[in-house]
Every structure is written in C-alpha cells, then in structure tokens.
Image (cartoon, rainbow over all chains, first blue to last red; front, side, top):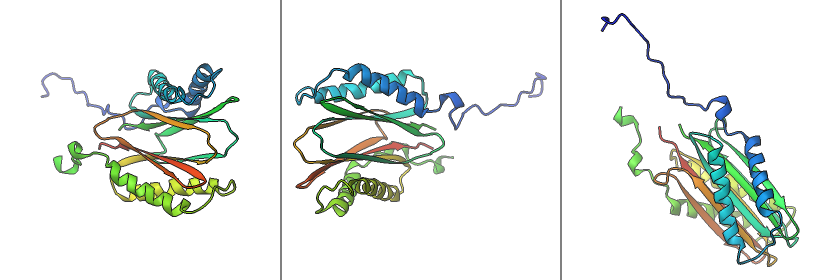
Length: 127
Length: 116
C-alpha cells in the first residue's frame, strides 16, 4: 500500500454541471435555427400535402444539426410548428420544470407570404 | 447504496395519466369560451402553468416541458412536429388536441427523466 512511495489522491472526475463552453447557449442555438429556417423555407409555399412531411423533416434536420454542435450530456427536444398565413390569430406558450442552472431553450420564428414557422429547441442536462 | 436509487428499470413515462391531466386543465380554462384576441395570451399561460403544476404534483423524478398553441378556427392549416434526442426507455411525450366551435388547442408535454 505504501510500498510504491507514490500517493496520489483520486480526484472526483464526474462533473455534475456542464462546463462554461458546453452549456446549452440560447444565442448560439437560436442562430443555428435561424440559419436552417432561412435555408429551408426561403421560397416555400404552404401546401397541405407537402407541409406535414416538411415539418417532420425540418425537426429532424435541426435536431441533427444541434447534435453536431457538441452539447454533450444534453437531452434535446425540438418542436416545429408550421401554419398557413391567413391572418388568423395564433398564440403559443411554454413552461418548463427543470434546473434553470443547466437547462435552457431557444426559439425562432420565420414568416413569408404563405406560411409562418415557429421552432422551439429545449436542452436538458443529463446528470 | 442500492436502497437509495429509484428503480430505473421501472421508470416509464405514463402518457395516459399526463393526457388526462392536461385535458382537464384545458377544459377548465377554455371550456365554453370563444376565441378572444385579448384573452388568448392569458389562456395559454394559464393552461401551461396549471398543467405543469399538476404534473409536478405527481412527484416523479422528471423534468417537464409543456408547450401550448391556441389557434383561431379560420380554415387555415397548422402542422406540428417534434424531434427528440433522449433515452427512449425512460423519457416520453404526450400530445393533447382539443377544439371547440371557434378555436383549436394543441398541448405537448415532454418528460425527461432524472436518473440519480
């Protein structure tokens, strides 16, 4: 036990909090979402047959892009809502029960003449 | 050490329970009301807050995300999709659709497990 003459204290290496850079940064995620929306929806018209597919595909794309960003130990939820622009009123709200220290969300809205799109991305730290 | 850990293998999100809770909340708030631009903000906020409070009262070790969209009925189309990166054995989601004569309401509940 003491024979080696080397005594190294074992340090705790399991981190319970994300490091500064690895935190789910709202601003960075919002930029990412904004870029994807501009790219994918620039000239798209609302179409009742194609839009369901587009919505699903958009949520998968955004989720994959966020995974690449390197938020390790984060569980993510991406929600995409696309609606036809007809001048009707829509209201969306969200409330979360989580650890405000580590978890966060980002959202963005995209509008063109025929549709509007709201994307919300939530990140929950996995302890 | 084993006694202090919750039974991870049995922790599954009960979607039906969440569905019932949320449905009750929506009924109590929107019930027989007609779409009103002034009140809709307050309605959506109350729906999410109440749903969240009731879900938390279940006492399970979950983090919850509740979103609600209320739309006036005008014949326009609305599509929602969500994509989740999580542990499918313990985490889950539940969607409640509700409507009356003048409006549509969609509530999504996402539950992310906390494994201690």
